[in-house]
Amino acid sequence: MVPKQTNQLDTPGTKERFSSTGFILAAIGSAVGLGNMWKFPYITGQYGGGAFFLLFIACLLVVGLPVLLAELAIGRAGRGSASSSFVKAGGGKIWGVFGLLSVIAPFVIMTFYSLVAGWTLHYAVLSFSGQLFNNSDFGGQFSSFTGGYMPIVWGAIVAVITGFVVVKGISGGIEKFNKVLIPGMLVLLVILMIRSITLPGGMEGVSFFLSPDFSKLTPESALVALGHAFFSLSLGMGTMITYGAFVNRQQSLGSATMAVGAGDMLYALIAGLIIFPTTFAFNIPADSGPGLVFVALPAAFSAMPLGWLFGGLFFVLLGIAALTSLVSLLQVPVSYAMEKWNLRRSTAVWIMAGLVFLLSIPSALSMGLMPDLKINNMPVFDFVDFVASNWFLPLSGLVVTLFAGYFWKNVAEEAGLTQKWFRIWLFMLRYIAPILVLFVFLYSAQIIKL
View 1 (cartoon, rainbow, N blue to C red):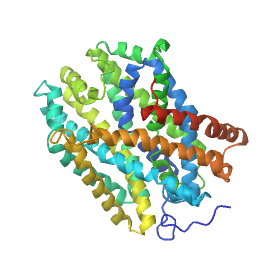
View 2 (tube, rainbow, N blue to C red):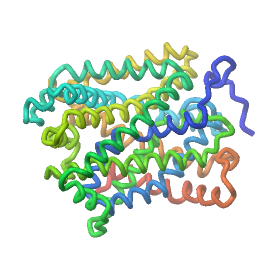
View 3 (tube, rainbow, N blue to C red):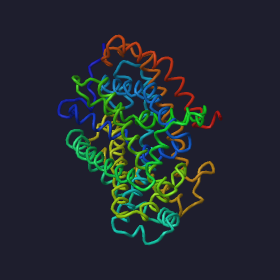
View 4 (tube, helix red, strand yellow):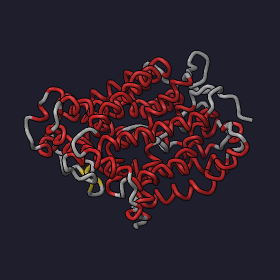
């Protein structure tokens, strides 16, 4: 039997729940972040176009969705924070300690992710105003911007926006925010996709993206696809465990998992249909790395009719993707603080948002003003990104698979699957997902090399 919960998240007067539609939109908002628009196109370009996309989909189905369902089930069973839900779902206290990884990870991620969100908002303003295209040295513009104080200012703006949403609560803040922005994001995606594929030469990019070249697939590309499938669903960040704590009992977690996976897959597909036609139309290398978004694409927008408009819409799209993810990330430590120290929501939100902003400053300074601000010979920004993405997330995901696959007695009851699907899901959690996630960790942490 699962013990009766009396934690801060589920006590009389503080009980909050998502509606069914609101939960799915919020979960999709958490999953579809900057990664699918920023990272996915250039790793797809690097590892074989359509073949890599198919591999990504396979990894999403084999590992991503089983782990996503496990995280949601743990959250709903425990009705606690990303740490305590393991214990309240029926695990020992040691699982709560392991679960702390899922609280620390999103906090660390926000310290650099909020900066990138600020970059997107800054570039949206520059594009709509036309200032972005006054100078054709887009690389120099980006270096000048990140090397100044303005990223800190924009980081503060992002922290305030995110805090303002989360302080309104689950249904009044996070759900309403996503109900407006996720449909808005879909409209922007379609507009930008149509503009991209109708560019002269754009269909060559479509062909590259959708025509698989399996000769380019390697063991390394398989691990990269697996890692991206895992991270693109916000797994290992505690967000889905935390969101699961606010899901109604009537909600089918299996259906919700499929909906979130489909949303993530659709977003990745349209992102590719925006980026690749644009890069091919303007002879931009599709595998040009993270600079693709802030250096190469502005050059493309400057050369197309109404480029200021489409560039502005593109960066607004990125800003929405970043903010919906940041909202879910902030809710994780907020839930923990409310539960652990019995804080009011408003107090927990502004303490956590303030700490995130303060800790983001070293990362911002390491990008230019203080280039010698390094940890382990890496700029603070890169080091924090590396540790969070390559250590915390895979280890946290591994904890989820082991708990749900081997130690959770009531896993079948909470998952709510038919006997056939439950057996398949449990097999994935026990014998497939842990091994593959471990390989992702060893590869991402550079412990093994291919």
